[in-house]
Amino acid sequence: MSRALRVLVWHVHGGWLNSFARGRHRYLIPRLPVGGEWGLGLAGRDLPAATEAPVEHLAETDLDVVVLQRPEEIELAQRWTGRALGRELPAVYVEHNTPPMAIRDARHPLADRQDLLLAHVTHFNDLMWDCGATPTVVVEHGVPDPGHRYTGELPHAGVVVNEPIRRARVAGTDLLPRFAAAAPLDVFGMGLDGLGAHLGLGPDRLTAHGDLPAADLHTALARRRVYLHPYRWTSLGLALLEAMHLGLPVIGLAATEAPRAVPPAAGVLSSRVEDLVTALRALVADPAMARELGAGAREHALAHHGLTAFVDHWDRILTEVTR
Image 1 (cartoon, rainbow, N blue to C red):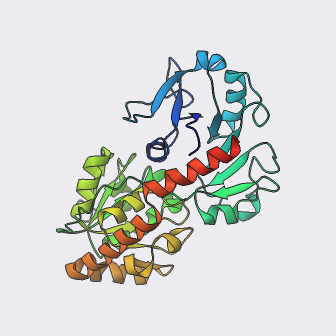
Image 2: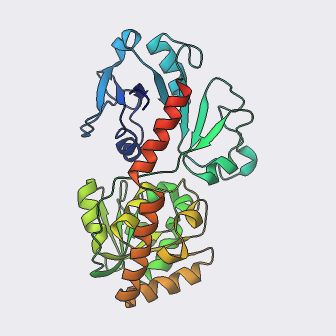
Image 3: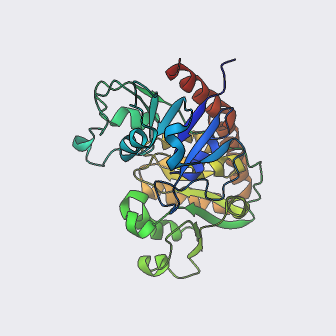
């Protein structure tokens, strides 16, 4: 077995870090006295293998590899550690996002670099980003299993989205009134203030529940009959995979990576919204069918997006780049 490594990685996407830092390495999270996006530290997360790394001590800290997630981190890592990435300190860059929706603008900011490996989180992103000669790999998401907790007792659709008003068409926010005609929508996430009024939906058709802790969110989602995934353009949010682990059937747009993540046995995907509205109405009216599709969703999620496969894949990558 390869040795455990000291991995420098920023706290950017909490859900992804929650999975990534559950491997067998030691994960060092940069911390600044003022916190903020470049020095957030653990921010209260319980990750036994991770420790906060004060930025002022990084130059003297023994490191094996740095995992980057934003272009600005390249300069920060070199300045804070005093080491050149790729030559003195191996580096992997994780691209969490889809490229801009205008495909002609999909040239990646790290294209044609030979000094690092670029890891995409979905095969769709690997296909759509123009990375030039930069070597790439795909590490599909994996999440801790919250357990099969589905009851589906509420004939509602659960939706998880952050800042739906700002993200608008990207998140499919404009489609929510059409789905709300088939079932009441329970929306969870950040930046939900004024969403119902923005869409012209009353509390009988849309309820905003805010940003809940993960355990509370799982409990709440498991009570909803269906999980609704209305995104037009996304890197496959972790909330979708968590909902599938919980045992929720999925209704969603057949866009980006969703067709790979949600097979027919797990729900209904289509680019025709009318088909999805019809399917949502049918699942809300048929708890047995919803439960059967939810079981298929959980089976697929466990097989393809489990935590063990995710951390094992990252272990192989980190071992290879530091060899």
